[in-house]
Length: 140
Length: 140
Image 1 (cartoon, helix red, strand yellow):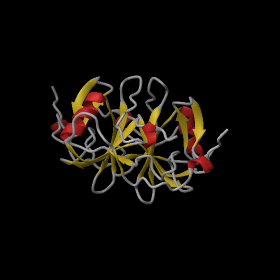
Image 2 (cartoon, helix red, strand yellow):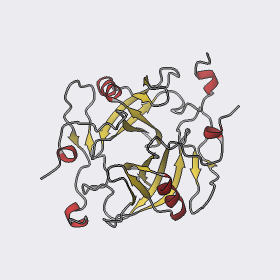
Image 3 (cartoon, helix red, strand yellow):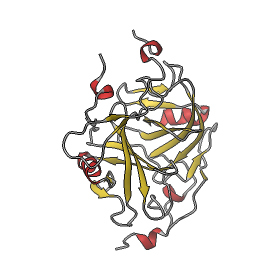
């Protein structure tokens, strides 16, 4: 008998103990991984209804429209859900010069070298700043 | 002053209350998103040291080498960490016909249609089975 969560057609997100699912955002054109964040039920509902990315900030414990401070909104081109429905994937059209609050296109700008033990020294990769976060975010 | 977590070179993963970081696995050649899972400190250490993907299963509460049952291991070509170090991205060479335990190449085989309200009917996309999970997984 097939599992309705895995093989069914009803969206039934499996929220974790904090009421969240993981969301992976990639650039719809280049395929580049831009960011990983979380959505609660309300963020997911707003994203589906509006076609614009909404998230839930774990640190600020607040619903958050991507780009509400920076203007760097994300238009969702396609959304998918994974087998056990605890993660969603959005392919987005990223508006503005970047998705990362550090001023970069992607949040994944450091490589973890492999085949190492002990303390790991990261290496910057694709880490050039595409905007000045101090100029973009409210400094109040 | 720059934030050492965001701008530093020391790998300092920010594990959540359950001791986990999110891990996104993409196909190193095609860029396709294969799966989203979690790593605890031990899974992360083993992945870095061995160059093979290890995860921590939240449902089984167990360390888990990808492919230990199916043989569908993942060789890590590159690992990256995100700005706040609570997510890692691995680009992998996926061995065998697929990464998903349902018998598909990727776990993300259903589309969530946008601009809808109420109950959402998913649509299968890239959902063809590439292997028979009943033949691959132990049925004890």
